[in-house]
Image (tube, rainbow over all chains, first blue to last red; front, side, top):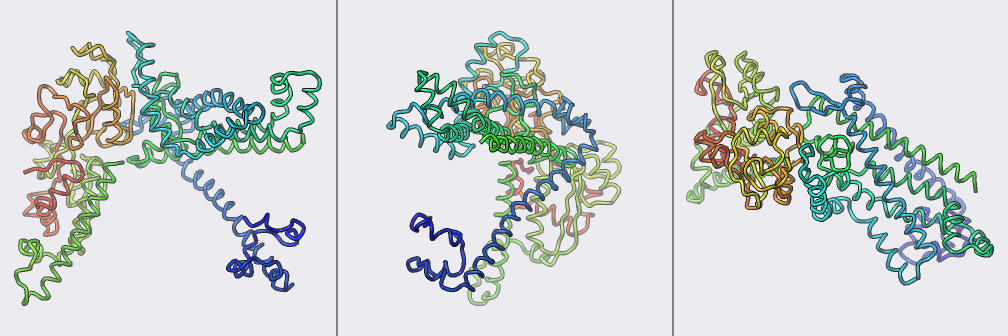
Length: 338
Length: 299
């Protein structure tokens, strides 16, 4: 960005970053302010063209969201009608390829809800406390180590999490499973690919989101609050838990909602560690999430089976929509408080 | 997934191969007077193909969903070789396919089982074009190398939960399988008669994933196409029979099934493009194609 090169006052005369023709011509040499404001006519032309371009770009996003919504509903609803809403949403038997097929996805929906909730319960405390550490208590040298680590964590592709899950988490989980269920006649051994493994992977994956947003929420608290608390004789820990975290509440809630969004939409990593059988979401059961249900069977699914997969997509889509609407509401509420 | 990709790639290679093959023959024919020795072997040995290069018409097949990969691969490469012929394939199920061919609505009925006697007596001819074999694999540390079909069924139904019940080590059994809709899973369950009664602990969406899971999990058991077996797992004997191509061809290994392209009447009584399709399947190129989709060729 070239923005800091110019004094602020002058920059405000035109919008920074407008890719007008004159701007482009001048990128070869040094930027010169004169060429842009030299001619009123060409300047207004640039402004208008840019505005049109912006508008068109903005409508791409609207178009995409609209077409996805329409597409999801068009493709997701036929199966709902054919199979019956209650049979799909509240049925517990998933046998899509059998001679007498049954398309109940209740366990799949429950797994997504339970899995995401557990991941949040595990990930959010760790994330928020890390954020507190970074914003308040960390010595600079350690913060310099932790911060890049978190940023890297955010950038690691989800399939890598899944691979590590297979290599490290599943074998450990299998040992635990063998100890806990030693001699059990009813438990089905999963080889470590179970709900807990998926939850752990999800919890790690939402950490960067939770940490970054919570940290910036903590940092944006006015210093006066902290100063007042400390001046009243409260200890540092008391200040953090009684003043700072309550003050950063709306930011932390935003972090949680975004974490939920990421967790519920994740497919690749957990498809590798969750076992992918449709079961009740108990800790040591092999389970299937909404996302993995689509991923794992899309390859060979045909006809009604395929349509039901679209319905699962629709359910997931509705979940994500609800989460986003909640988020918008929270953000609006937060803005009012300010 | 992986299998499908391999099939695509293989089909792609075949298409490219056959295209370049055509190019070569054209090239070598033009300067034929100068360099007669340079003519490619392909051009030499296919006078029949030359003759039918202008073969045109259409072939329709319908039938087994399990044969989708094979049928599509055959259709693609056959059409690439004979641009004048259109091959269409529908996947309606084995019995429906044979009914269609007997009714005369399609030229070839695909069936992933042997024909029944009444189907044969109605005029359907059983042309076995490939054999599908499934191997049962266990992790390399497993001491049990021989299972009976009944044991296998009870493992997959979730009735047997520990290898010690079958005379192995005291190790829990981790039942690994494929996702619903997979042809391998369909064949496995159908051959053992355990459709929809399997209790899977892991439903994985590719052959490679099953191999990896079984190889890395003590006590795991899984099933894969015969062609992907390697040293990372043990392919167990079934009723004392080793899962090898020879045993499958001899018919002694239980987990195999024929892929039949049934015709109404003998092949020689079919229209020329259908006859040519069977010639193509019997040629080296056709056999290569059958292998490329993970099947065993018939001699």
